[in-house]
Image (cartoon, rainbow, N blue to C red):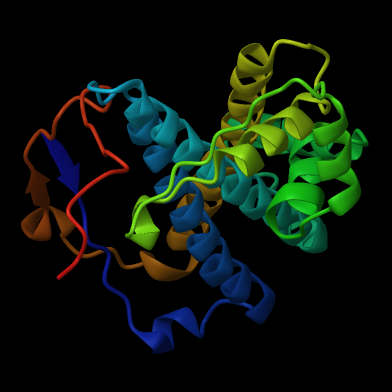
Length: 246
């Protein structure tokens, strides 16, 4: 079981915080929600669904799509953190050592150029870079056979020629020629950095709440929500193919 505590506060209470801290609190909450949802869905979709191998191929395509968006969100998160760097100096004495260390790791990662998240964000996610796609295309021989999977339902079509070429352009971003190993490396790198960001935001939220929201903390135990145990995250299956909407 998981204990969830609703923390209720008025707009008047939120107004007691300095504007820059209040705005970062609100936009960082949105960012943390996005990272949480995208990261969790990426794990769920990678779980094998069984049946024809096309099912797993389709889910791999969905996972790649999510990882591209997660990389884009994480890169935008870095821009947000970088913009508010002066703010965190005020929080340095209140943040946990782990949060400060995560912030250092995030800075170190993004100060290293180029990095996988930045490359995916600018070439495969928020922007579509034709030159990058051409490099992926050039890595195939003229004997390569591509396959697209078509259906009368738009939602069941998979243009896998585009996907496999995109995958190969992603492979060029890491130091391996094995596309499966490259994807695992990319997935690991994106989810690791986004996890650091989520952990840092969580600790910032804790300090912000203690300073401005829960200064006269009411009894949150009485409003506690108990969420029953859900399924094991590695057992949930989300198939690409399903009945079309009516």
